[in-house]
Image (tube, rainbow, N blue to C red; front, side, top):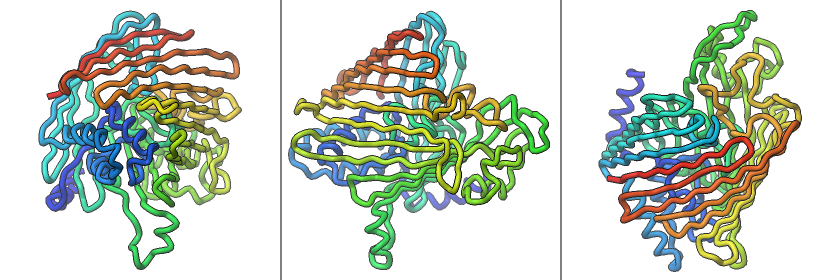
Length: 465
């Protein structure tokens, strides 16, 4: 790692530093709304989080006079993450009626009774580097004691970002969850290579390719997972170890309102299994005959598929269509044993400014306990016991109806209903959330869930310095 870091540090002297906008920032909902209304000309990235350079380019593309007030709010929010030094401190207290996992909360599991969390996000951005450090404390059923959240070094190089450290990622078009990689489990320690801003082919030499692919994004990462207790080696013996996870997303946009992504993840190595360049090449490009054979000689556990986002601005009802389709395995170089997500998002519903209404449907493959399980990696597709894909798990279907009112960048109000239909049971859950920021320096929040499996209520406060 040192041999890699030193030359990258030297190269970064020529390019400005940047960091990623945290996934819980209100910027994301506002950008999605403005894109649906047609106020943002540039295409939104599909991979999250967005970096500050990407958000700046999106805001620079706004020229609609009616959206200038919203643009000023977002520019002020963006400036907070472009400052040389930023500190955010947050505390929360939650009460649950039984032990339960909180969806998309980076591995958070509430215990029966009182729970507490505290964290401090410290950021430094210079003309050459970006650095984030997030220590915290958690007192609940998972990871009680000190912990480290997003903590990484960002090194820009031309139009690429090299990120070394720990970071929560969201790969896919799903808004409520993704099939391959979400923030449901703990963040990984990764080496990540991603576009700073969208890029194109040379405008004169490859004009046809530019028309076909449009603006493109590339995101690639390799990380180490937690210790797995049961990894089956090629000789059939069982060992423990630390497998690796490779993930990649390639997004292209034939036009600025329509994005198509190809995404893929693969578990490999650990427990004495082969981790050579040959194995890495096989999981990176699954075009040989050794993948998904059902034998112990497979290079790893691979998943992949396609996702899309289509914004449809209009004067009657602005909307966005999106979806994912991915396979647990591959057959004939296409996803196999597939599951899917489809959704629709209405912005300014019924001409009520800031009112978002969305519906999302998830359908997992019909065979019970197939997705997120594997005959080699018997701990499943997990990091520290939590599924890295969709919190729904491997069975059944889930419908989610969500209503969110974005008053402005300062506050929002959310109400969601979820219906899960499994092979053996079904259940309903009501989720809610309120966020209010006072004087741009203190943010208050209340969120919770009421359901047949578990119910909880939480309050939180965040100070912004």
